[in-house]
Length: 94
Ligand SMILES: [Zn+2]
Image (cartoon, rainbow, N blue to C red; front, side):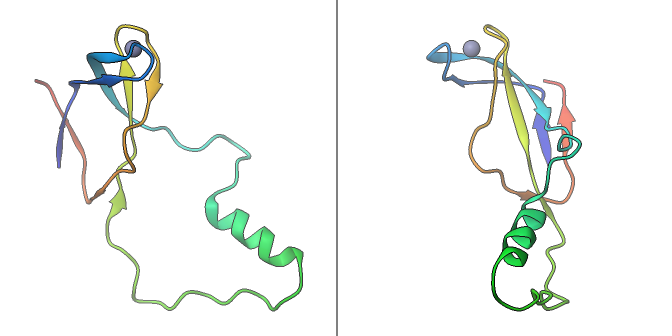
């Protein structure tokens, strides 16, 4: 899927539509746990058995798109929506 480098969307800080730069989100900070790690820790904390593995062969072949929008007026970054699934992402100059 192709994504334009600059788009005009609403900025919650400026409270109006401004030009935004699109960028891919960077990897999680060092030391931060993933969602799966947090769930595992929670499960191991209390009573109950060792967590079972998810059935194999049902993995999704695509990853969710995680984009950040940086306002060119105030310079603040924000996210828009939850993202969607795509196999490959490409930035396109417009
Ligand atoms: Zn702004």
